[in-house]
Length: 110
Image (cartoon, rainbow, N blue to C red; front, side, top):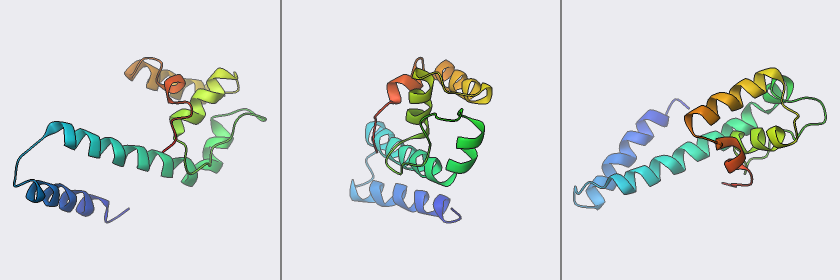
């Protein structure tokens, strides 16, 4: 995690150099989306015990699959009505930022 900012900066400059310093927001957006999804899936694994404890009810679909995003797990529990109050709050915020985000994220494997 400590090397993440340095790695991101170097990746940015290497990609600019390979493309002869031409800049494309589309390519940059794709790269950032890929990085964000990867971090999200890692968070699903790293924080699984915490998230299983505070975001879902017993018997809910559990966090921890390394090929699944946090939003996907929230969406499955939202669908199955197994989110706790805190889980509903997190899903509400995500769905306000991007309408129906959690439900759209179901089965969007990394």
